[in-house]
Length: 225
Ligand SMILES: [Fe+2]
Image (cartoon, rainbow, N blue to C red; front, side, top):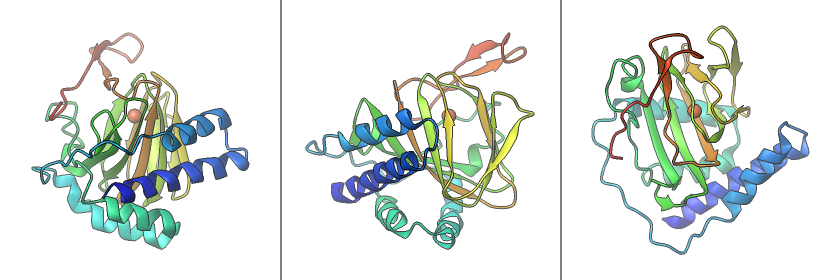
């Protein structure tokens, strides 16, 4: 079981280094992420999660995975496929007014990390599914984050809700600590791998009661944390 997650982590690390070779900025972060994934201690016991409870967004996983295979990168996807049953799938956020727009079309499973199948405090690596026609509300966190789009496509809004860019399979989306960002899908579901470093246990938050800069910091409640 651990070998599947290890294989996936090694594939992601290798891909980050390949992107670095092609001068994808910021190269130093890609190199650090790859180093952290390569340094994961695989000797501990994995944490077997119970079968996922109410994670309705998982219904989008088959279509998103099919879209990923159509897009390519098969070695990484073959490794990912073996991890699907090991991921502690969850809605991540509890149900609230903030999460309502996406909670039923959202699924997240941390394979490596503070709450992952393999526990690690320095980096997290997980799978992320967002169903079609869904908006993952704007949020921020202290961690540096990279999404690697594997299947489908989505618009990322970084720094401003008015600035959107469409990301497709093979592309990386990078956000810096405390950078405001949200995600919106169109007709296609989206499957991505995510990695967090620099305090991967830090909570996500959003701003309420005013504009982003002046609003009150609010941490949405999480499930199982
Ligand atoms: Fe994020």
